[in-house]
Image 1: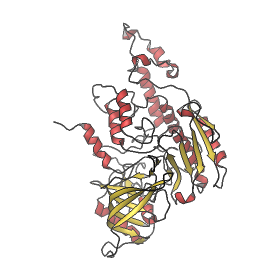
Image 2: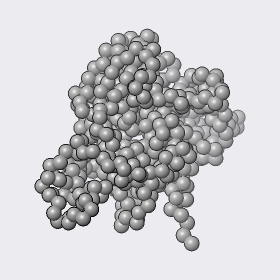
Image 3: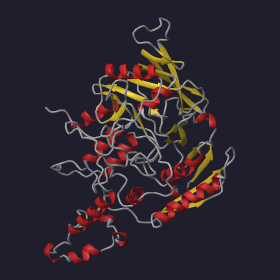
Image 4: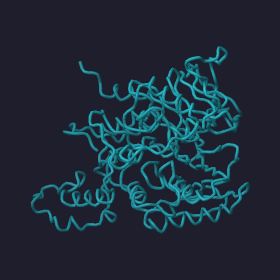
Length: 491
């Protein structure tokens, strides 16, 4: 008897996971190695809660297998000191508080006991995440090498060099390269043309032997023009009647006026929910309404003005899709979940460190999100706020636009990719996790892979409480449609 595919999918849950909704500067593996105060290979030994009910922290204890750097000093692998600690602890903002309360800070790595990891970390106290690059310096070690939270690996293209790629190098080769880099104590010159420094660079060869390509949440692995893909999908949809809208009973399919179907505006169609108990119909096309308040104390700039400008940029790019409304911080919810007042404020500078630009916080049981912005964001403030307002509108992170967690500098407006992602939120039912128009096994597979993840706007978090769990599985069950398996899985 063959094992159920779901069992295979659930095996992937042993990997270190993170849910992105926090912004930071992008760091290369070489930059992270040179910036770290401590670098070690170890195993997650335990996780415990600390702090207060209002501000909980999670303490992760690692059993250290090998130190490569400690207190900012490189360790000689051939002759390490005898008194190196065998365990170390790192503290992360968030976790379970008192009286059943908890706090989720998206974008921070989520560890599991017995994971074997490679860690680049700072030793500064009070950082929301001591990992270099917020989550970028946390790697799970597996048979293919060191894997980051986005599914990419560290490869050694030359002695003392480290790059992010779709395939990894062996652990021993990787550790040797880190040691050589630390011994040089200087950032190497950029790699020669044709040798990609990071995954996704132009001209990067694709390993067709891989079981699959890492895909960012909300994005796709291939680099084709999203606008052209969207237009092509629209044309295909016009040529074929939707599966959820068959010809009327007794009507010959050949009598259907295809010309009229091609020009019909889906926004004005009235879904027939009586014949669609599984909720497979397209959602309402009403604009998403986002209400927010701003607390600009503790920062060098008028945060309210910057937020208003970012909101205007979103509204100008997608006027039919989203509306942002500034509200008094004390305003109570008035019109249901969509009228929750999200809070945007400057955070304590001590939480951010040199890499973080903003943190997105979620208190389970509340439909309002809290965004903390670094007082030192400077020129990155506009891209950060564009990203965070997209989060408040319901967008997951991913891709290369403003919704990327490593936000690009100089961006002043959402890209067409970001706008299209926002429009898609209003088209597909929440249970249609993979956005293929039907709630079926492939959505169950997506939920299984995300099970246990925490964060904001996770596609599989169907009830929006910040965690993918049994409640989301039950929501999917109610909307599930049993159908014959497709010849090939959806893209």
